[in-house]
Length: 336
Length: 301
View 1 (tube, rainbow over the protein chains, first blue to last red):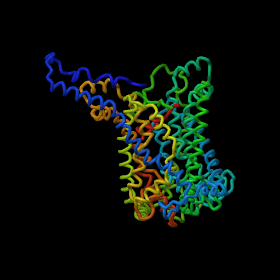
View 2: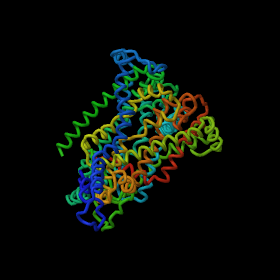
View 3: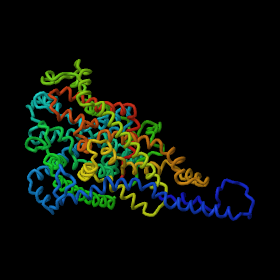
View 4: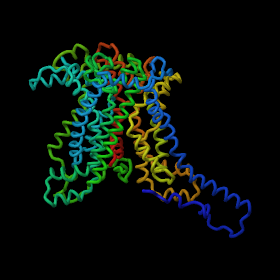
């Protein structure tokens, strides 16, 4: 991948295009001009790569890295929302405070369960869809675009629609379920139904997107793998399980990581799904996620310091996930 | 995770013409779809579109009708009225203007900065290149939500609450963008082109301007669209900083409709519909390119 060509071109013969030049006679001024040019050239070659990448890094440090680290610092202070610049040292009190809070653990559990209920079906359906999209299809582009329509829909719009669809008395979902003999489910107030409903918003928005990612990976699988499998008499089903799936392992791992990170941050869906329009994730915090709990502590209860402690805790959890991912992918690579 | 699945044909998202060989004994991905496959696709398509269509149906009805079973399956007569009311109630005109501005500036900036950085990572040699690229990939994994508290403190200190630059600034770079452009340029920009420009005495900036930008244009367009969609739909950060004084983005305005005390569900649906329509139109027109872009950005471990 490393290309060397870009350094190959420069100095020796300047302006290489000029064909005939009277040999030998080089004035002193010309000589100086050449050294100056070649010095400028070398400086350009040496420093412009940094000039090209530095805007990204500077802005990222300003708006990403620095705030992230500063969150850790703020988490050791008492900071009120009303006076966000006034920080009082608090040591680890914010942490003991949230770890003593049942609602923190409740939110952590909810984040985990909503994460599982949303990620697992989403990725499995995406895999199946990608497999089907990978056939020779009429209007294949049409289906791909349609599957992506939910991705174009914002969290806000999607959540508000799903509130109505999942309405207890007049919602479409309960109406459809009554044909199956299932009574009215209180999708907003009961614990598991509400978590399923919130997860449904996430599944709806992201399944098509993940299907496209899997589809891209499937199209990159060398055709001769299938051909030799077919020669060995493998059915299509067997080909899927013995050729497609193993080849997709890195991609599957990647989507798992991305979805896990996304699931750890869920905020807008439970916020807008709440019938009480609060930030507690339902009257009994039944679907409050860590993201929502952070918002409640910081912007409703006005304790920015405590909210920082929650953010920093979430960050540490993500680091653990990252390490686990790294270990698994190393295993995978070693085994294949 | 370094290789993407990019087709050399570029970001134009052209489907590769399937080889027209003998039809029998095609294996794996090349097999023709049967009726079952089409049935599943149609089912999923309905599932994808139904909530959107139903948003419009609910917006065209009134509260009485929404409080009856069975729920409405076809349009009523109030759609235009409700759209008008929602438009004024949620101040959507201003919200659209704001969001277009925010998403436009962010997308343009991300595209420009990602292209030059992606070019450096793809084609130039410099000390620390691989380490820096690893950092870029690592930062793709850190969710921006975790940084909101200090950003909020910064905004409060600068007195930028309710001002658009508070929303624009944190979104003018993207690690994904850098990665995306790098992957594209590695394959789409022949080294010979750069060399030729160098031989003609072009400086690095000239190379960027005259060689890299023209070569990267398709990918820049796709990245621009992806970033526009992402910024348009951004919720948490705008929700935190743009609340008090009526200077919302579309998402904040739509959420405000939902969280306010509007008793009228159909009005909320009308607002949600208005907030979604522009992007749906973009997808209807550029869907093929966006699909291609997402598939190219797909990462293989």
